Image (tube, rainbow, N blue to C red):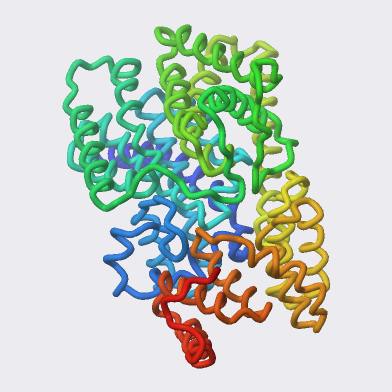
Length: 538
């Protein structure tokens, strides 16, 4: 008996951990093909061209500067994200396989952490359903397959650790995990409000030390963030928009409907880029749909408060984490698939708890129970197959941008970016083809005009080149990346004085560039008898 007891105990522990191991393995194997993918779009800037992750001498900059300090500041203070890239570079160099491996591992661990959280809050069955949805849903593919969206993976990792510590009343681990979540991505600022709802809905515990600590940490984070010069405004990007507060309210309901459609319809085309037509009235079908979804979610929360509190908490979590991506505050684009990674934590918990409650209410011998199990199984298997197909989209810039163009054929900038991809490959004919397509949609596209003008100039087609270069020369640059093309355009057009002025501007934002310093010195030598350095071009 004395020997049998420990064996039985070991066996029970093993069987108890088996579901978590299975979920970990499934999540990892599902995304294993991503190891063959390369760097895509923003990965190039944040990894390949980012000097700050390639030497630990830049650690102070990593901790205190904008994540995008390689270009125009975007008010993204995410030092944990940048540190993860630096650690990857120290291990793998510029081998994308290592960076993708890190992302896959974090997603697999997040899935297990969600399982453990669901088990703590309810039971292993609901936790299993929740973690399977979180692991297998295709909406997660963008977050896992694109290295530059790793901030969501890290924020979810530390958020789930925070929740474990919070419900276990482990103060110091909670404080550390929450601070690291904040330093991974700004949307983690809403976690204290989600914890407040957790106290009300799940625990109903009057002891609020953990909550006070959460708000204290949030206040400290805001003080440090603001003292370092980070605001919450964003620079204009490819899909930026300008909308009044009234329009943003309508847009919030519209994107809510679009997100839920994407979650429910696995056949929907993936959105590596996602644009939305601005709603103009309440008559917009998607706005109406969003209002209905909002009402249904509120009703579901209210109805499940007493009978299924984990469902109520999960749906409330979705609301809380939807707020930062709702467009009530203007964003740099209306929607993005990876923005759903954190809301999916709550949605998965609600799904798992709701499905478990429904199955318990149906007798074991009832056909409906078998039908329910079969339906969920088919959905999850199909979702896993879609993930495998979506992963192929992120194998390189070409496939990524082609998918983006399929989803948004009206966006000129995507054709321009695809042209850049072909130019890097020295496929000049295809590059020209896509620059021309860009300018058909938007004759003023900055990149396409500059690149096409430069290519025509090098080909000796000077009259044609002049058409595009003059469009660039008329631009008054405001972003770092615009100064060089404007300077170069003036140089190719033969106006050395104006070229020198803008090359000096380039040198102001990139003082360590030897190439630009040589350009400035050469032009100054040519113009010295004619102008003084302080002359401003007219």
